[in-house]
Length: 204
Length: 204
DNA sequence: ATATAGTTTAACCATATGGTTAACAAAGGT
DNA sequence: ACCTTTGTTAACCATATGGTTAAACTATAT
Image 1 (cartoon, rainbow over the protein chains, first blue to last red):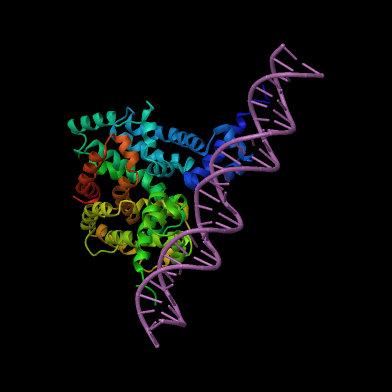
Image 2: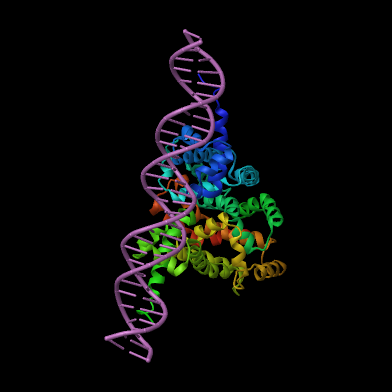
């Protein structure tokens, strides 16, 4: 064997690659910058990941693996629709604090490379709306929700929670808020958004 | 003078540059591809726009000039809040049909280059929330709206309308819809979204 | 017709960039 | 001690890329 099976290097590369890819995208990222940030030689990137494309895919998969559980909290959890909305809305901001670039990164790269989603959908743990759909229909039938399509409701939940982070620079400019103000706005949304949605769909 | 002051060439360049920049972003765009698409020599790009950066800025400004009136329809129109919500929601999809890449393009490039927004804000016609804010406060005071911060309401309106197009590939995958289905979902949102918002904020 | 000035092109240039190679270092097995 | 395998580096390579240049072209004014 060789010197202590250095999975440390691989981790350093992935961390550096994550930072660079998520900040600049596939096209804007530079292998040299990733190497520098990881504190290693550029050849090591190819030794561990063969090509920029494969390194990118590793970073992308990691990122999606972190996002998927968030989505499944809405789609496949056992709580009621109202509870899901409250929980997701309250939790999502904490997720963003830990992984601020992920949603934007995923959305952006999927737009650039639509075929990419096919690989993700192959994975059996890919979030799926079917269970959520049944649940919404049931709650409508038993009268606890006003009629709404599950897809539309899901889109609304995602939109209200995810968009403010994806479009942060634009919204900050339009609303004349600085970073401090914006943080407060987002903090307020933890409860605001859930109420906004539930107001609209709950039967009285 | 020379042969008929060819502003045709400039227009062809801008159209080609728009397509390439909006599809691939600043970093992913190639001057050669823009030249090919415009059917001209690469040197012409520099003759008319000096550099990739300046050509990009021209495209970006054009794009923002098209988006700004949409935003002002919410922020600076004279109709009531309820009317604005209905109109914006109904009109926004038509805007997207004409300019499908614009919102994503703006959001993406502003995230990549946050200083960029400063130039935009200098422009006196840059959309501003102040008038909308006063209006929301008035309608709350006279009892036609439930209490909500103008900023939060504006963010919600934007999110519900813009996000489904920005995150289209992701949402299509999560909801198991093809292009046809998705188009129908968006069509339904023309009325769905306005009702969803108004349901939530209108006093009974 | 000729000069003039804006327009267009082919060829060129310097550098950036993803990727490769060959040599070397370190550690374990024999 | 020596071989083998793995990790690491510096130097190198081919190509892509943004940008420049000098010459050719074209319409118009004189």
